[in-house]
Length: 319
Image 1 (cartoon, rainbow, N blue to C red):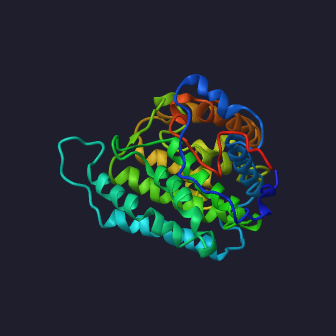
Image 2 (cartoon, rainbow, N blue to C red):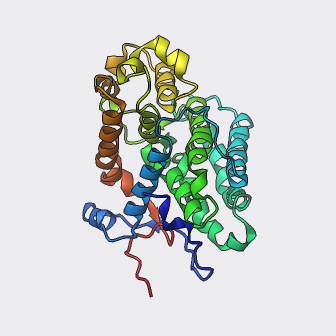
Image 3 (cartoon, one colour):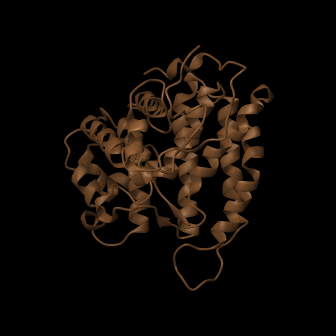
């Protein structure tokens, strides 16, 4: 995949629409997985795989181009981070799901379009309401105060939409993962910690991780053909401490060990099993398969996904 045939700027006449849910029942899943292109599923997975290829074998500290759009996205995420500092958790009887999260979320809900407008040039202003929906969907659920891979997918969809309208370009791909997505992860970890968010639809010890999936895919790609770090090393505390600043995968492992107590094999059984896989490329391929099966093809996750003109549920007829 090359970052799409996205280089064609969208026609100025495109009718942007507010994305909405389209998968209401299990049989509706067929609409999502059908392979007529371009449909949301094909575009979404194509985007994930393009980025996977782009970061292969590269450290987070690698020198890459940072465009103005990337800088503006980081500034947007910095704003969300600052709002967490301005919205401390409240005293409440239950340890989990701190209600101050709802105050924080209300601010994003109100400001999302203004924030997205700082990233999107004025001639594309019509796209802002559509694209902003994905940003609002990407930070957790304010009723349940939970966060999971469906929210993470909405953030990837947000970035995918920005590529489709030409705000982000092919030469931004490394920065999309290393600068924007990585900053997003930091803000999500802060949200999860500060407001003690619940994992959405958690599979407990059988899931890969309570909250994220994509950084394990892209993070394993970063480690392909590493001169000495092998999958067995990510369960070794010393290897993690020495290398986590360079590799997204190890950063995820570090966060898990901060948040959980007890033996790694018990709290993160799936990851423990993955540490026995001989090579990073096998880990990467296995995780992509698992992501499709456990996230993208699971009704409880995809029923919340919203479809609009940029990520359409129906095959787009040209003409």
